[in-house]
Image (cartoon, rainbow, N blue to C red):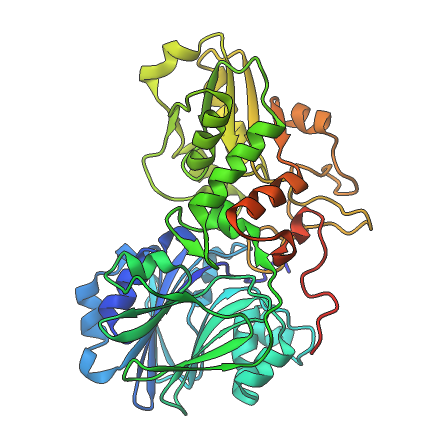
Length: 476
């Protein structure tokens, strides 16, 4: 899988290009590597894909490429990839397509008059379908589209158990097909704007742009059909077997989003409280966090322990280092974007600092924070993670990670494993590797926090932290 393309992304579907552009712009936190749009008209689908962020394409220019008189529905996608392919970022961006004529301009690609197009968030399990790896280069999304083209959406739902929220445009039919797998690992939301139905990975995208406040989450195991006039119908295919990705709340989702009726803000608040109850070193003088995601948890940790959370660090750019294409990209993003506030240096010289973080996966953020604090006179550092150890080798000897839609494949260089990947590191070994005192919230502690926020542990996928495979024993 060295060259595999496994997208972890955000998608939107609506009847207006202006809405789709606005919605996807507010899902930029889900991927900054590439951006793409499919425009669907009567018997015609055209696609534009480009490297970079949504803001790199101006709306007025997109309106010239996709005039409203020629199209009735639009799909858009932001992406980052598990495996970096610098020479293929634009080509591998979504929408993926079948057929059409390609115009490659280097920084962007037009694909005109395609037979079908797909946007996808997740990572499809293709074990039960016949694919041609050489043709698809181990990429799950075009393989899923090819399977749909040869069969139908019901066979996709039946034989590809997860993980996906996806949308397919097919020139043979006027409506766009939108699906969420029966396990609901990746999020999906239905809203309404100007009397027309629209879809997005997170509700925040629709609510920030004038959509109705009374939307709802897509039901796992259900297929939706969005028509050119903005109406919708739905077909339930399977009963829901919830195995939602906890990392959507812990890290990926916007702080203002509600995913499957559970507030991201509420979850992170409870995670901070649970972390404080489990681990509260008495010698911490200064409490802070590594921006920006852990801020809410740091504040609730501070409330629980009677401290104040200070903003020691800052970023000049809003990008997330986790979304980098490869190791070097992630490291460069951290080094060139994480800084320390010089006006506060006098507060922590010779002091003990506790840093709340969402997770320590590869250790890059923690090492950069350590470097900045030590060179500015800090005596000792605690890293307080509100996510349990990710990437452990389970009790049955299986190396964990994510194969369902987050950039943490089992073969990744997890800090919790030895370099040869043959065993889990002890807490002391992790501390020695990072040069700090590192604490991880317990698995049961995380489940307690989620329970208080409104989601039971049996409804969460916990494979990456040692739990069961989410698709085990499912019935076709």
